[in-house]
Image (cartoon, rainbow, N blue to C red; front, side):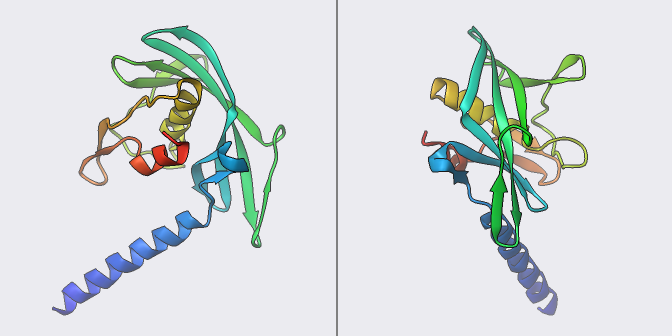
Length: 170
């Protein structure tokens, strides 16, 4: 019984910590123009919806780019800048297979959905940023309710949560 109580308290504390960390970063800024796609160590990465550019439109193949800005949160204050702290991300989409690709060095790399990414091994923001770009360009979901396998969770989960789509207004 003592072990059960200890595990239960640990799980509740972990969930509360996750809630507190996530809520420290606003989900959107500038009336929804900036959408939170990643947060780590006091820096929120926001996709700029108004910066979307359709580079190639050839259904079922698309190429879209979008700008990301960093919002730095320090001492209960937030600073974000365009230009010197922004990055443009490029994505290729295959509508039929629901695969996205992004440039890596001199070639394009497919983003593996059946893997858990950390900040150390690759930007975990890729699918969220790609989804913001697609929704902003075409006002429709790319991944929608597509499932992927999470080795850490040892089960299937949605690529993009429904709450994220609600933040995008779709």
